Image (tube, rainbow, N blue to C red; front, side, top):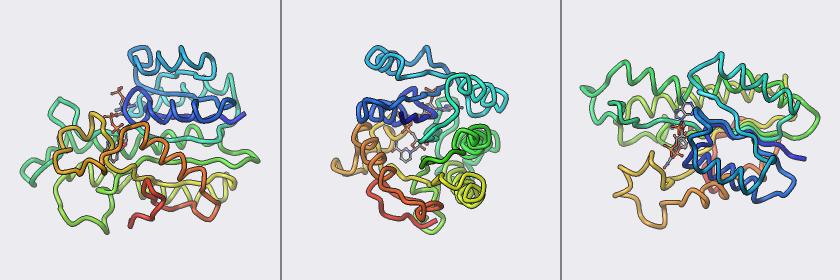
Amino acid sequence: MRTALIQGASRGLGLALASAVLAGDPLARVVATSRFPARSKGLSQLAELHGDRLQRLAMDVTDEAGIAAAAQRLAESTSRLHLVINVAGVLHDGTGLAPEKKLADVDPVHLRRAFDVNAVGPLLVAKHFLPFLRHDERSVLANVSARVGSVGDNRAGGWYGYRASKAAQNMFTRNLSIELARRAPNAIVVALHPGTVDTELSRPFQRSVAQERLFAPARAARQLLEVLEGLRRGDSGSFLAWDGSPVPW
Ligand SMILES: NC(=O)c1ccc[n+]([C@@H]2O[C@H](COP(=O)([O-])OP(=O)(O)OC[C@H]3O[C@@H](n4cnc5c(N)ncnc54)[C@H](OP(=O)(O)O)[C@@H]3O)[C@@H](O)[C@H]2O)c1
C-alpha cells in the first residue's frame, strides 16, 4: 500500500492533491497535515468519502516542536512514506504580508514570515520526516515552489519576500537531493512549479492570466502527480513545471 503525506492540505492545491491521490489509487493512504485539521471542511469531506484511508494530523510548519510531534504520531501507524509533498505557502495573509511592489514596501517582519513558511518550514518537515523515506522502495519528496522563485527567470522584479523565500526553498531542495542521494538513495527530491492555480493565494493576481493558463486545483493536482509518477532517480535535484518541463534555478 502506498502512503503519501501532503503537508498543507487544508484547502487550495494541497487539498486537491490529497483528494487526487485518494481518488487515483484505491489502495493509497494519505496523511494530510494542516494547522487546524478540524477547521478544514474540505478535509472533513475527504474523510467522509475515504474513511481511514485519510489520516489528519495537526502541523504548523513554523513550529519545529509541533513538526517533531507530528512525526512521532505518524510513527505509531506507519514507518514508511512513498510520497511527501510540502505544499503550504504564503504570499499574502490578510495581516499586512503582501507581495511588495517596490523596495519601500519591504518589511522585515513580513519577510521573515515568508521565509519561515515557504523555506524553513519545508526543510524542517524534511528533517523530521526523513526516516519515513529511508526504505527500499521508490519514494519522492517534492517541495511546491513557484516559477517566480527562479533567479534565472526573474525579469519583472518585485515580490521580494515571496520570490526570495521560494529561491531559498529551491536551494534547500537542491541540497536535500544531494544529501538524500547518500542517506535515502531511493528517494527522489524535486521542486515543482504548479502553474497558476485558482486558489485564494492567486486570486488577487489572476486578471492578467489567460483563462486557459489558470488551472482549477483538481487539474493542477493531477498534472503535478503525473509529473511525480514519471520521475526517475536521475531527476532528483531538478526544478520542474506542471508539464514536466525544467524551470531554471
Ligand atoms: N496558486 C498559485 O497560483 C500558485 C502558483 C505557484 C506556486 N504556488 C504554491 O503552491 C502552494 C499552495 O498554494 P495555494 O495556491 O494552494 O495556496 P492557498 O490556497 O492560499 O493555501 C495555502 C495553504 O498553506 C497553508 N499554510 C499557510 N501557513 C501555514 C503554516 N504556517 N503551517 C502549515 N500550513 C500553512 C494554509 O493552511 P491554513 O488553511 O491553515 O491557512 C493552506 O493550506 C504554495 O506553496 C504556493 O506558494 C501556488
